[in-house]
Image 1 (cartoon, rainbow, N blue to C red):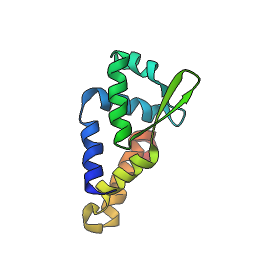
Image 2: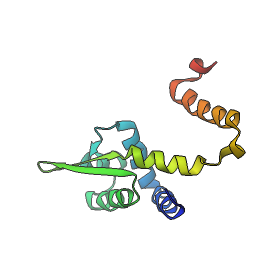
Image 3: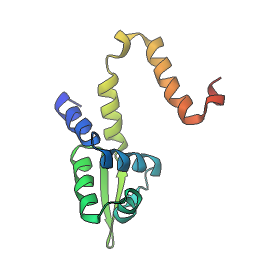
Amino acid sequence: MNQDKAVMALAALAQDTRLSVFRLLIKAGPDGMIAGALADAVAVPPSTMSHHLAKLEQAGLVLSWRTSRLIHYAADYAGVQALLTFLMADCCQGDPRACADLLSAIVCDRVGVGACS
């Protein structure tokens, strides 16, 4: 990922509704959610949701596919990984201990404090 693409991705996330939707899609996993369920979850009209999902898709953070009349959306984990890799590329001046602590903290928050004690 280059800086222009990273700026586009971060700009897409720098909006309350889009950030909420993105977090829902991260939680939903690879099966994602249908557009209508996303709109209901964040209480916005379907047309507004379409606009937000298009921005996230253009930024490389969301994938979509159609089954019958439904459009499904899921986090693009490759795009998320590319963004995080770009942001962390030069972490802590290359000190692996500092980066390991950061990554460990993320995993501990996800798994629960007890798992990391």
